[in-house]
Image 1 (tube, helix red, strand yellow):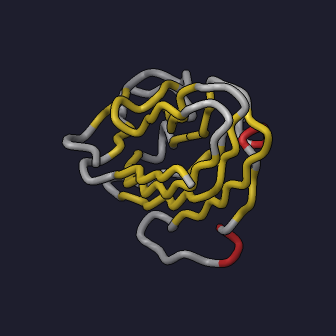
Image 2 (cartoon, rainbow, N blue to C red):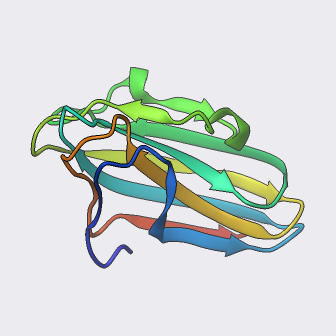
Length: 142
């Protein structure tokens, strides 16, 4: 569980979150669930992806997010593999609003590596993008 807010300003480079990362063993299968509370202003907006530094045999990842100040809908539910996320998913911000990102899936590793949530501003701005305290990553080797 993320113990405090983490903020980025004037930076569009996807970078791993300080807390939402985990090391995975080689030749193993994991299930995971991640809930991320993210806030951004309209000017920078925000973007995120998932990265694994090792290699995998396969992965299935499901992503959904609420709209800023809105509810979740079927059009927000998407299925990915790690390879299909790297260009990042952009989310449109609204001043002082927070959205919730839901990610879950299964990863079959080939080699050991680090699994991590990466995020940044979508456009460089002096306005903050923040991943909020209470965001969490839960995983289990099966």
